[in-house]
Image 1 (cartoon, rainbow, N blue to C red):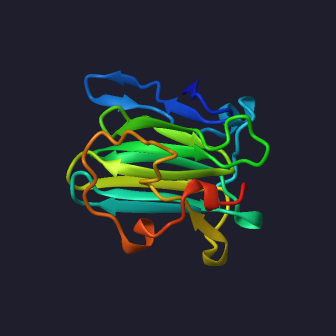
Image 2 (spheres, rainbow, N blue to C red; image 1 turned 45 degrees about the vertical axis):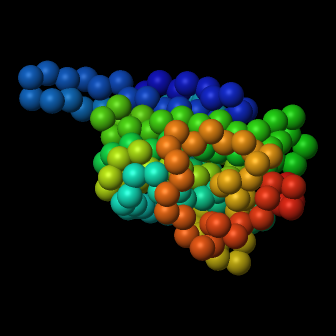
Image 3 (tube, one colour; image 1 turned 90 degrees about the vertical axis):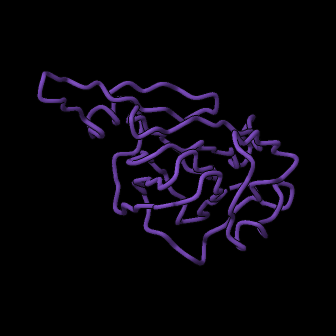
Length: 180
């Protein structure tokens, strides 16, 4: 695997190194040893699947706080998304900054998101599926979010925003969210 650091400290794009022949290829998506060598989380007690239809659909920006704060490892299994993370770590030099990368099922790339980040995405292809590995089980009492359309974040979504849940439309602006 190739661990490509992103612009926000602790976040990585993870790329596969396929070994192949005429039949196809084999590659590791995850390896305790390699993640450990990079000082990354290697405990994943929960795995989720997200299915979204509708090009331009937005989801997020979600996070967990307190004892439910989580590391995430995401991979696009079908379709493509523009994936965005926002640094909400207390005392971070990059607090409130974001970075976006395209996750693509054909590229088979992943994003490693450390604790203290909000996460969201925009669907770039109809019928898109994401696989999430979480370092902590989900806790509805410790969930939070930041509004995807917050002008202070100024996220340059690649497509005009389409569908959003009522919950996501009503998430607070960054200035109303306490650091994690």
